[in-house]
Length: 353
Ligand code: GLY
Image 1 (cartoon, rainbow, N blue to C red):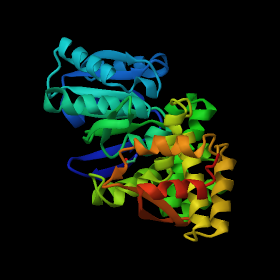
Image 2: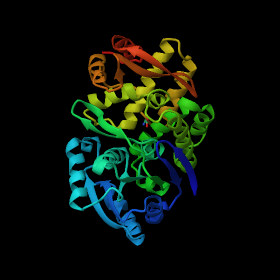
Image 3: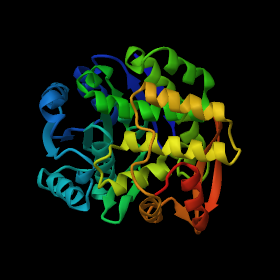
Image 4: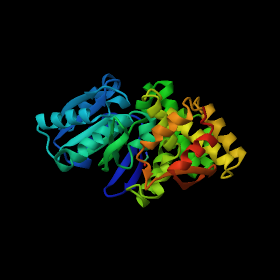
């Protein structure tokens, strides 16, 4: 079993091994000492994996209930958050019991937020079932729900007690979802490792899943250890997200997060090349790898629409947005850009019309 230890306000392990789902009960019991568990999962994941997780928890002596959410970003609402809290209360869970998120980023985010606030904080475990959640959202303690005005507008930093990553769960992912995870994987390579970028070029992610997950989690571990609360270095993890969130909003969340991040990375790197922050070759290499993983690189929305959507993003602080700008493969910088200059960056990134 591969193990990555995360050091933040709470220390915990990310465990990576095929077949781990059936051992989760013992692992969760050992990490939390809880007597009762509630599993939160989306309606697609529910029929695939919930029964096995429930069985494993019950075999470890945990009384277990299940709460199912409709899938998709549209579910990450205050209303569903409230429903989860009421369910916990109805089932008489206490702070020492455990909430287990079995699913992708949406499930992990809303479950983590419920865990961080129910009775001022209860045990929480992440069991990612998408590549995107395995390499990024399940680690590092960001939890949130959306508001009609924007994504992740309400949330907290709340670290899980454990992350259990069973790569076998990713075998049922539709191709499009796997590609979305690959966008986040490519993000890590552009941020911090030329060698990793070359490995992604040479061999499909699906053929090196465990190594890819561990490499991304280790990179995230190093960033979170230095900046858990996202005040500086951690902002690097938003590469492609500033414009990406605007793409998601313009699409009414029909463009998936990973696809939007891909479009966002392509746009910011185009702008970086135009403005002389990186070479044309760096841009071509990035576009090539995104296309190799069948990810979109062109923004389907116009400049005015994208600009309006970006104004709602919480990434604006003090009238500035922190754009993550690639300088070369493996190195990016944080650029504080005034609100009135964002349009110019978008236009340089090929967002026109
Ligand atoms: N997903 C970006 C972060 O955890 O900071």
